[in-house]
Image 1 (cartoon, helix red, strand yellow):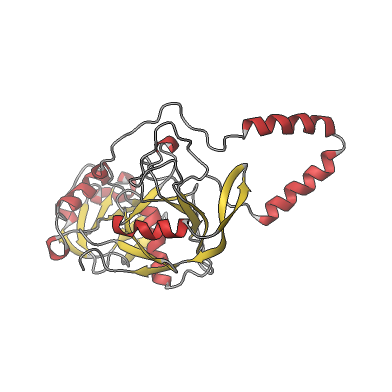
Image 2 (image 1 turned 45 degrees about the vertical axis):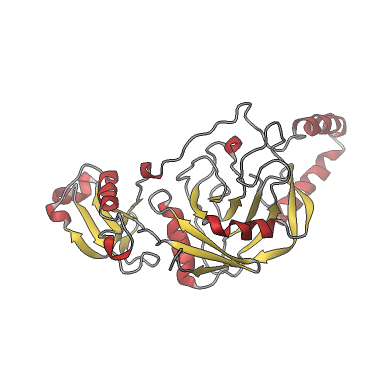
Amino acid sequence: MARRPRRSILCLSITVLFVFFLAYMAFCFSARRASRTLTSSPVSVASEVFREGLNDSVCCRGVDGLELWGSATKWGSEHKVESAEACCLECKAACTGPGDQCRCNTWVFCGNKEHCKDKFGECWLKKQNDVLSPEVVSSGDHSMWTSGLVFAKGEGIFGLETSQGTLRIKLLPDCAPRSVAYITELLGARSCAGCHIVRAEGRGQFWDLKGDHVSHASFGPPYALIQGTLEADGIFFKEVPKEFCPSIKRGSVAWVGQGPEFFVSLANHHEWKRSYTVFGFVLPEDMEIAEKIASLPSKLDVWANVTVSVLEDPVSLRVVRVAGPGE
């Protein structure tokens, strides 16, 4: 996935090339010819497109060095398990329905034997009042706890408000907990000045309405996605380590690298394999909004040797709370 180039980096590159141009003219000439051949296809596509199913139940992750608050529904002092994953799975098992039927949306586990001592193995199942604004007891290297969230049916949905409509996105806290923590921080800030979509490319003739690749067709350009940034002015963004990287499906919302650039996929990109952290997915009924954005006026540009379509007028984003389906 190509990143939007930064002006300072581009200027530095041009300066360096100019300085060494005369000394290496012959070499550069031959190198440029070779480069054009190597980069004529911007995306390296595997010879065999694989299709693998995605089972969300395999995800049960938390954040080390984090203790979340909440009313205890099962006391850890009387309940010990072998791992953080086991604790997470117990919380999931207690949250099989919507709203009041979900008896656990927060789990806290003590897994550092040296620091936990007699608390080692404790698994606390809790209930937060607001899962999109979780209460934190402590965080950082000094905390011996690992915590995570579990969203009930219809919960954990936020919106990216645009001029074309609001994209409702279901978050995946059990798969990408650090990514979700950043989104909840943005929601708490109530501002996302600087957040926008700059790149927009439709499915073209290469992917059908369901997002499936057309047999024998190219893999782009266009690449069937919209891309932007969630780096808000005044909010420090710490790069997100790679988390859950499934095959990219139509509607997947993922980071470019470690963020804060992100993209929404308009197609099933099995050729990208498992390269990007997916932290949510657009509700199916809202994908037409993403398609509208992809059809807005754009112009061609080149990012890191990849031909992309950049919007003539970037689409501003607001991160907002929204109601889930049927609410």
